[in-house]
Length: 522
Ligand code: NAD
Image 1 (cartoon, protein in one colour):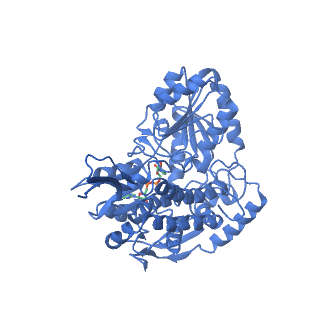
Image 2 (cartoon, rainbow, N blue to C red):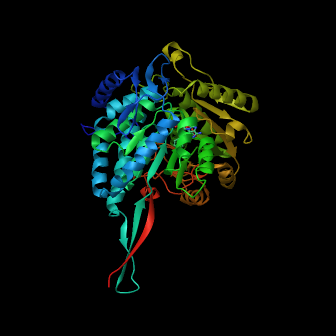
Image 3 (cartoon, rainbow, N blue to C red):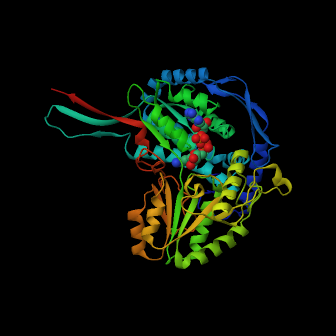
């Protein structure tokens, strides 16, 4: 927790604490002092400059340069994997208690610096104050949770049964070797820190390839891991393009396992291609087209608050964003009217300012995707609120669009495809059975929400919904807002392959393999 006792999570709704606002302001000043510089990446603790530099600009204001980041090459990726392989024997044999101590220290450093790291996250990827601070705390808590899991299971070494006096067997979970982590832009610190923390706690060494739109904050994470005592060869960070460096990682035979978080297209490519000669563990966490279902017996104020927060929080760019709402016909018009009224009141603006809920989308491609989806919705159905790019005053320099509510037919691409913009589609249903069927009629299965004051309906929802993370009657978010140790987070179907969730009871075990050790003593 940050000094002063604040702890922002995704369930924190208000940011009117004066002290917090002041500390965040100081964090912004500090983060601004980091902007516009040249940044190297790190292999074996050494600075590298790769082949050229890429400039990253802020989605809030395209005139703000986050940094000029050295571009790692395929050779750098090869070197990083080789160095991680060399460091593996020592790190894997370091007692797990010592690894956990180092990682806990890293988590505490992240929390201590929550304001400056939050501000950098906000500048780099456009999150509002609470989302940015929440993400940084989540990064720290993910690491802490995996440390806690190692401790809770006493390092996963368990005595087994005996068939004779002389034979003693233990089941021991042991790491795999070099683990590659490829992370997305939308949670650039949490979804780097989580898999990296899990892999390191388990005893693997790690090569991290962050998103091209999250290099700055990923380098800060790297620095913190080193400051906390993770040895130079144990973790490496490559700021390079996905198609070359990411690909070089998943094709390297010395990469023993890999965690990817990102789009379905890239994730499936990695999933299909990573294993050529022998099976390898791969964790792919991918997209979502997350539904909320609103029963005729729902509290509509709760339902519209929850849908609004999940549809427009971080501008619809969470994998868990609510992008489809199925509403029972008797309450459909009321639901839509309330949602539209609240949408029109949503505070869109510079996300560095307290009280702003919706900031920009990540880049020009996302603005184009938004504009074309809004146009398509207008042709195939109707745009009920929003639908346009915002180019008022200083917002014209960033990638701002209106929170948007549309009604489209269910065979529309707007209904079916993950768009990753603040656009939610609503649709009436005649029965809850039809709602489950339409909710599940997607290749994805990440999150889902349900609103009903009838407990029997709630149980039917829980029995029928095909998604890894589900919420009922949640005002703080219909489909978003998981927290380590509270709501494990992982997808079913086309949203994820492992069947085990991040921040959950069975996650750190994914980074280890079982060895059955029988010793005969006669
Ligand atoms: P993306 O797939 O474009 O990129 C993710 C990462 O993959 C980046 O680091 C990128 O450089 C790298 N990459 C790109 N091509 C590659 C290749 N050929 N080989 C190896 N790596 C490659 O995703 P994004 O736009 O950064 O993130 C948004 C997507 O991530 C959305 O689909 C969202 O739903 C998903 N996501 C899922 C979860 C989850 O937990 N399920 C969480 C966050 C985001």
